[in-house]
Length: 216
Image (cartoon, one colour):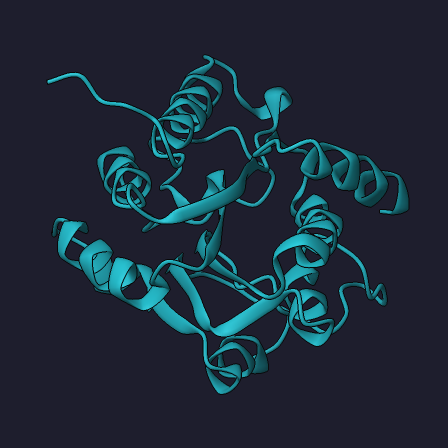
C-alpha cells in the first residue's frame, strides 16, 4: 500500500487524473489516501456486488473486502457523498450493509436496479455529489456474470452492461478526480468478454472527466 500511495502522490501533484486498472479492490485504499492529501474527503460512486466495508477479512484489516471501511475511518471519504450501487449476494458479516448505511452511505441494492434504466438514479447522484471532488470505483463483479464472468467473486442477479454504461455516463458533469476498474481476472475470462467490457468502461470513464469536449 505504501508504494501505491507514494506513486499516486506524485501523479496527483503533477496534475494527473488517474484511472487505474486492478488488481483486487485493495488498491482503492492507498489511492484514496493519496487523494485525500490533495482534495480532502471525497465523494464516491461505487459499483460492486459487495460493500467492501468489512472490519476484517480472514483476519486481515487491509484486504479487498475492507478498503472503504479503512477509507472512512481515515477521513478519505465523505460518507454523506458515497453511493454504492449493485450490492447483493453473500457477505462476511450481516453488519456490512448496516455499517455503510449508518455512516451515511446511500446503498442501492441490485434488486432495486432490476428491469429499469439507471439514468434517473444518476440524476439524483449528480445532485448528491455537487461540485466537490468525486472518485469512481467500479468493481467488475457489480455486473451480472452473464456480462462479466471473468472475476473471482461473481454473484448472480447483477447489473447489465447497459446499466454500467448509464452509471458511468451519468457521472458526466461531476468533478471526477480519479477512478478505478478492478477485479477483472483473466484466468476466469475464457472468451475475453470481461476484458472487453472492462476496457470499454474505462474508456467511458475517460470520456466523463472534467474538460472533455463532446462533438455533436
